[in-house]
Image (cartoon, rainbow, N blue to C red):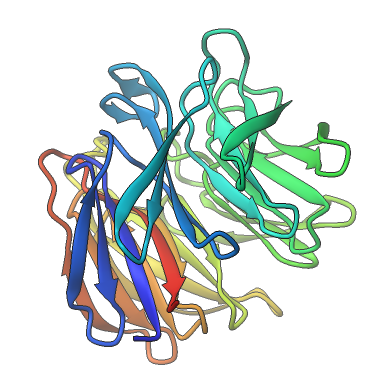
Length: 334
């Protein structure tokens, strides 16, 4: 087995593990309701799970939670639950493996405004927090050189720029609201506007120069995007949601989504593949040959061959409500 694919079921409150040689189910781990995103720490060989809400999703939930669940992916057992209160709504996860720090986006509530909590991955304790100037930072990514972090802030009209060494916010990049993002050595890719925006006429990927934060171009899409992912093979994968004409419901009324593929060297469109309903997270195999699209309404994960853009298989993820498959992580063999 070359690697394992871990998949969150949001309403099922589980993480499922699949062998990527044949995509057979290896096991299922129950976690605190309702999990959202995953991040694998290769140094300590642990899988982190963010749990932002007691139920529901951003902007429509039954209350915040303040927990991160830690799983041993080899035994598939929960080894710790990290309480980050009074911080709340942990969602986006980005690892600085060299420094042993996990950056967790958190929402406004309680004592603090929106920001990023920094967790020491060895002690599993929060050691710092960075304000992002927005109430709802939802995703956070660190640049490949480990010097800069970027938080996308849903409906807030900017991306927050964080100096990692100074552990402080140092700038803003104007966008019309934003969803997920991807960072390369030279570029920043941001899905905008945010998924709750009523106007999709200007939907697409904003491409920024990383050194100047100048807008270089917009890679247009027909309808809004949520997930963005940069593969090891130099492809940009984005998940386009598709609402039938006249529909405004994000959870329900969804048509099959699309995985759009771009080349990050030239920013040219490479093709597309049909995927499940409402793509929420996109990741890839460690070698960048396969794309994984977790679709929350259909509760499926589509495995796409990125050379042919053909579907290899579709994984059905058990769910107990309207929101199913969510976070993803590729885990190398031990």
